[in-house]
Every structure is written in structure tokens, then in C-alpha cells.
Image (cartoon, rainbow, N blue to C red; front, side, top):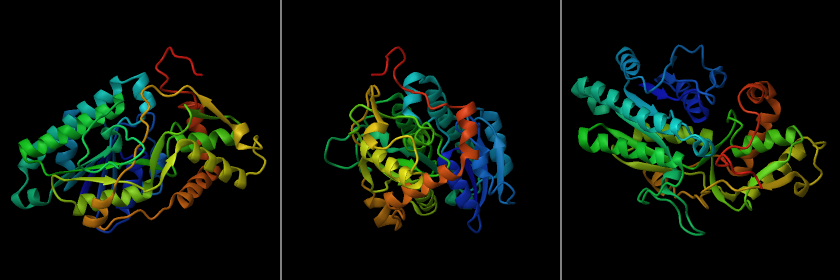
Length: 356
């Protein structure tokens, strides 16, 4: 199977590329613009493989993307290219509209034209898999879970842009007959994640003797999914999912942010006893909350389990320790990022508002 993966130099996309190029019968073309969060070093282990190819290109460039489709002749598309950090969407939403909405439209337009030229046999097996987020569903209260039937209620520029892209993909299926599947995932974590996200940011702060900034009271709740589990789920959905369906992918690890940060502190201190802080209370600092901060996300993965036989392999304790140990042992990967791309500064405070 020849698969185009957009955003394959990103955190989740690179995990997908590493997984698929290691499976028999797959050939992957990674199309990535290489924005601040794209990093070809995440693909070093597969860069020399004959079944892996890379194209440095923007999905908004229709002519260039159409040429890549014609040259590579894919059997499927896995669309992961997206701006994905809520805090950055608060400070600068324009990039999110351009990439997540306009980029998805452009890719759908190219895929539709390509699909319509395929033979009947190849049309029968072609798939367009759009990878999205649970944030399109909005915020849960203290009870309940997101299912595939949950109504969309996005609250941030990021989640609104992803909801828009989901709707475009569904429209291209219902109007033009493009064979699509959509997946919506919970919070991912694991090695190679850009350090603006919660888990790597807290680990690197501890390694540098910096305080651990926690939004609000720290009681906002997320469901955590290891990126390797997610990559395996995505391949399952691409190859076995029903056309036109949505699948929610969750890790079944629902925790408050403050609990996650406390666990990070305990693991780092166990690995490196001489970190700058003797206690968690001395390490944590509570900062002004993110504007419009959703209270709780939690996914019901029953459909994935019953239809596709998928369930996560990582429990959170095992996955978190593996992730932290990776960051401790891979300074050569993240130190250049802190020097050149992101120094750990506060994002998403709705410019002009001071931190508490």
C-alpha cells in the first residue's frame, strides 16, 4: 500500500511514518512544510529506508500537492498536517485557519481530482483518513464521555479550525463520494513531542531547575494516549475502518493536570535525586488560566475496541516513565529546540494580559 502522510515530521505523524515503514507492504511519502514543530530528526531511524520518501511542501500549495499525487500514485492519504497547540491559536489564530481549514480544503480538492481519475478497482480501495482531536466536542462536566455521536462544540480557535476541517472532510464524502474515515483522539504524549506541550515542558523545566507552571487550580482533566498506541490505532482505522465513519481514540487514562505534573515530579526526582526542588509544593507555581480553558475531555473508545479490536498497550505510569526517561537521555534532541525555537515561555495568555 502506498500512503501519503501529511505532517509526517510532526509528533504524531513521525510515529505513524516510523510504524508504517516498518510494516510489510507499505510505502510512505511524507509531505511536511517543516514549520517550527516539524523536525526531520524524528525520522532519522527510517530516512534511509527504500519505502520512505520525503517532500518538503505546504499542503496549501495545490499545484505542488497535485504533482506529488500524480507522481507517487497513493492508495491512501493520512492527513495529520495541522497547527495543533491551543495556546498558539489564542495568540495567533490566522495560521490555524490557513493550515487546518484552507490546507484541508486544498488537500481534499486534490484528492478528489486524483480519486476520480483512478480505475474502478483502485477507487474501491482508496482511503482518505483525516486525523482530528477530541477538542472539537468542547468541554465535558464532571461526568460523561465523548462518543462518535457527541455534538461538536469547539471553544478555542484551534478546536474551531479542526471542527471546520472535520466538516469539510464529511462534506467531500457526502457530496462527492470521496471515501473517507475520521478519527478524533485524546491528548497524546511520548518521545519526540515538541516541548511547548505539558509533559515535556514540565520535564525540561525540572531538568533546568525551573518552576512548574500550572494553569488555574490545575484541576482541568484530560485523557492521555501514548503516541505509539495512537499510531497503531490510526493504521487500524485506515485499513479496517468503515468508509464514512468516525472513530474516537482514547488512552483511558483520565487525570487532572496537577496530578500529571505531580507524577512527573516524582519520576524525575527518582531518576535524578539532586534536582533543584526538594518537594512538589516547592516546585509548582499556579499561573493565570488559559482564556476559555476547557474543563474536561474524556473519550469512550468502545467503537474502536468492538469494531477494530484495538486497545491501548500503555498504561499511563509505564508510558510516562518511558517518556520521561527518553527526555532525560536525549538532550541532544531537545536542547537545540530550546536554544533556537522555543525557550519555554508562556503562550496563550491572550496578549496584553499578565500572568497571575
